[in-house]
Image (tube, rainbow, N blue to C red; front, side, top):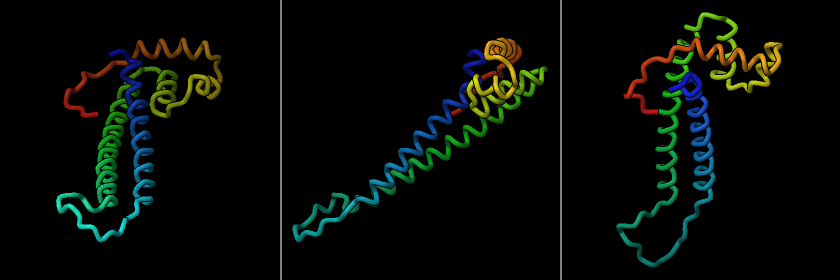
Length: 142
């Protein structure tokens, strides 16, 4: 795994969390639109009678999954902070933090640090060379 791939994990996990949050919002909207039908026709006793309850169970399951992903994201960001702090150049640390912890674009980082975009890319390449990627744990479930 390259330094770029390692540091980019947090962004991808953050995107997955945002996607799941959108799914929860969509399920919540659907759950509030569920209506019951009153009928005197006997129902199958094995058939679920509450669509709203089914929707709520799905929402709760998805929220639990989101909470697990958020825990993973926090752990991953903590690990990335340690890796970035191990880089011996403050300028490289700032650049890596802005990109891989704050998710800023390279253009925004160039403006913030008062450098040209070409210089930011040169700094990025030098910073990547200083990043020491820790051994990946196979027990991470993110």
